[in-house]
Length: 412
Length: 151
Ligand SMILES: Cc1ncc(COP(=O)(O)O)c(C=O)c1O
Image 1: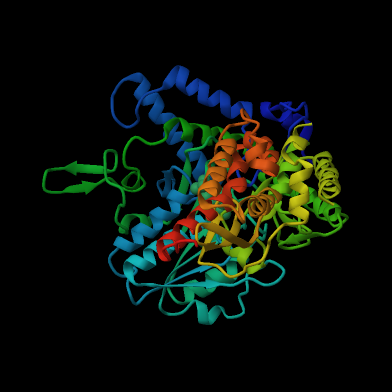
Image 2 (image 1 turned 30 degrees about the vertical axis):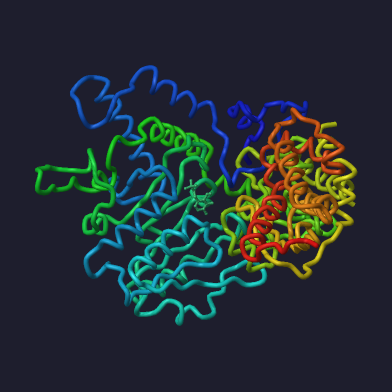
């Protein structure tokens, strides 16, 4: 069991009283997490004591900054059980990580090259960040974009997997945990089929890395993307993990300082991965913050966090079921489900739900959650989403339920 | 309470009982969306000479966007175009006032109820959705079919 009271004390914002006098009930963790003092302190210490540019310069600060930045890479590598630290590429967020892969494949030589004969496979529950880069790649290369549809209960429909992933498929990219439905997807079935046809597998782990043990070797994927700000780290830092031989073979995307070996006016050679993919001054402080966030998460324990969120999810689902006219969009049990719960409340528009909840200090997200195809699939304009994290409590679930009754009374 | 300043009774009434809803004959049709939240409206404008004969609409969205379309229909239908444009501009000014203006009831009638909404930046777009759609549709109606000289 987590000591949630102790954990909450590490997060200054959680004791915030809002301008209307209400204490904050923060249930928008799938959008971004709050940050513990330990991460804020690491940022301050970095800037107060060690700030310098990395990998260039012989002075003390430059060496300290480089050691801190590269230390964060070590922390990420062990957090995701990467075989090598050189497989960890820092980006600015998950969106950039996914765009980076799509662009590597667009510019690649055979056998990775995506061209007019290729197929790209995604799913209907992707975040726009894992749709649009592939649409762009398909438009630019003439490749065909295909996707897995969804079942009525919010899961991937894999019944036609052999027709969707074919010999022509070059890459399959899918979300491990949906940010709108909360669904945890069955990785193995998809990876098996992709491997059978020789397709690369890209996994968007943005909603998984913060909440559960993430083991890139166990996933057997080729690339895994996630974003720091959802896992207690600052904004502006993301990760792309890729298998070493792929990172060696695939071409760089952004060019600039840091990513080169030698440069002449005619041509350049590139630094080995991961630096090949990190053009320009990287987000140094943000990486240091991510390292501190990982240390914090490890201190609590990812298994303990997952168990806590599972309990909260079960409790929230059972209490939401008490609210008349409330329809959960996504799995209605906590099995293979994470702690982001979307719902509709009768005909009351999510905007109105969110506004009345805000008045009670409750922060939820409303809208299509950057996954508009999911809303289209279920014939709804938008949802209200409550999403929980390691510091969420049953009392906060209760506040949400009271708030929803108030919303119904207000618009009833 | 702050919430009541946004959700005035007038707004809730229009939301629950919208005026002039449904699509009818028109000279131009537009479809506008609010990409951040998915509010949508399809709106048609019917001109007769210089007079706005009808504004019909169908849409989905929050109470603010739906009520605003209903108020628009009340206010603009039957008006001469010049006057309708002035009302639209007055409403736009009110919504951009960040809570500083109360609105001129002579001009805006029920629409002054939206003054409170102007304090919520995230909701101003909801209130303006139908009004921007109307402006666009009217421009298209004028461009497409030169208005006949009214007798
Ligand atoms: C599943 C998923 N993928 C990708 C992203 C994009 O993350 P970022 O905006 O940090 O690039 C998000 C976050 O919004 C997400 O939930």
